[in-house]
Every structure is written in structure tokens, then in C-alpha cells.
Length: 406
Image (tube, rainbow, N blue to C red):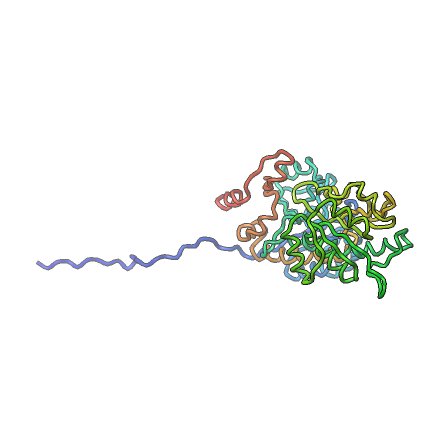
């Protein structure tokens, strides 16, 4: 009896099959709104006309409120020529699904917010208001903070740019207020041949301190840097490529150096709270009459005991015959440069978001961008904000994973 041959089906395949894990959506066109800032002392704008031109040429729609660029000396015409749509009603700008601001959200912005809107702006935690946060949660806002945005190198590009501007600017400001016309000592910051240079004390060896040191050395001043973080002092030396006088913050040494300096710069930072006060009123009283204090840390309380917040209109006051410059938003005084720096970070980010199919899709693929999100669809995803305002904290990674499953 002949045995029957086994039947082999053509539809049966033992080869490994390819599994589709994730398909990126098609490129999406963005609708971006840029309102005019009404916040005190805010002159910057988050996107320059050049950046708007690139976005428009890539098929995106940009709506801008009239006179939004005035503080940075950009005219409405610059934006319309770049392809932006100019509107005279603030509410029209806020209808955009993506809002880009150069100042934090304030109570006046709340009535204009839309459901499920995405907002890219500074947070400025010390002045964030509970009612603004509550309104954002109710409107299911997704919010990205300038201070928290990370790049591929793990650094904070906008914070660094603003710190570089502030550090470079403080020495130019100091030179201005040392002049006789401004009731300073009448000393030239760099000195000339045969005359000793002005002595500068910088407290803090972060980015602000580093760029203040660079500028002071370039002008020819004598510089001494204090910081309690020895690693930062080492990094400063390495980045500068020259040896500078450095010390940890020891009160007696600091007081002795302050007695004989012409300029003292406070550039200590504290990520989550108030800057430490390291210069007492007694130390300031012993400084030379006509010397200049510039407290860059003033937006976090200041590191000089005698510091009080001043404005760009009235930037200085005199205490113990020492000139105090305590303007909190120094980069806003150099608004055009600062706007360009912010724009250089945000424009490529927005282009990448469109290539990924929107900011939500980009968050799925870009882990650095996730660090910038402090609210996702109305859920607070920043632990410091949740603790400060006693609101529920939700892990962003879980929210994103849940939204993908949904």
C-alpha cells in the first residue's frame, strides 16, 4: 500500500516575520501664535523675523500680535515680510494651538487660553501664581519651560545663552557706573600702562561667573573668583585657559578682598530656592566709596544683604556710598541679542516637532524634550512645582505611554 505524501501548504512560513513597533506620522503643519508681552521689563520676543521666515517657508502658519517685536526693535513690517499674519486682537493670537512667549504666563493671559493648547514660555518659578497653574490644569494645557529645555548634550541651551549674555553684560555695566558721570570712583575698568587695573571680585563660578571673568580679563581688569564648589572653579580655569585667582567662599578672605575692590559681582545660583547671602551689610559698609555691586542673583533673592530689586529705568541705588545694580532680567536690557539666542533654540525645535508630526509625537521620540515639560494635558509633571503648590504630581513617561495606548 502506497503511503500518502504530506501536504505542504504554500501559506505556511517558518521565517521570522517583521513586527511594526512604531510608525512615525506624516509631517504636520504647525499653527504658532506670538503675543505681545505685557510683563514688567520684558523686551524680548521668542521668534525673530528670520526664524519666522524659515517656519513659514516650511509650510507653517505664524500669527503675531501687532508691536510684539517693539522691545527688541523688530517692526511689524519685518514680520509681515517674513510671512507672518499680523493681528490687532490678542484673542486672535491665543487661538493658535501652539503659543510661544518670551515671558511667563500671568493672570491676564488666563482668559485667552484654549483647551489642549501647547505653550512654550519661561516658568520663572518664584513668581508663578497658583491661580494661573489651576487655570492651565483646567484647560488641559501642555507647557514647556525655557528653564527646563535640554539639548542633546544634556545642557540647558536657553538658560546658558541668557547666562552668557548676563555675564558678558555685567562688566560693560560695571565700567559704565565706575565713571565719574555716574558718581562712580572715576576709574577705568581695564587701567592703562603704568596704572594698576581695576580689581574685580566675582562670587560664583557658573556660566555667568565664567563669562563675567572672560569679559573682565579681556578689558584688562584684575579678577578674583569665589565659589564653594571646587569642581566649578577647576572647570572655570580649564575653560578660560589661563590661571585666575580663585578661592572657596571663606568670609574673612572675602571681606578682605571686597575692601579693596572696585567691582563686586554676585553670580551664585540655587536651582530650587533662594540664593545664599554671602556678603553681609558690614562687608558692604567696608567697601570703598564709589565702588559698584552688580547682583545678578537678585531674581533668586540676591547674594548681597544690601540688595533690593531695581528696574531698567532706575537700575541703581546708593547704600553705604556703594553703587548697587540689582536689575533681575539683565538679558532683557540686551533684548535683540537675547531674542536671537532664544529663537536659535526654538526654531529648530519647532521644525523638528513638525517633522515628527507634532509636539506630542516628538515627546514620544525625544527624551531630552520631555525634561522641558512641566505640564502635560493638564497634569503637573514637575516635582518642584507640585510640591510648591501642593498639587498632584504625575510622571510624564507614564502619561505619554498611557496616551499612546489610548
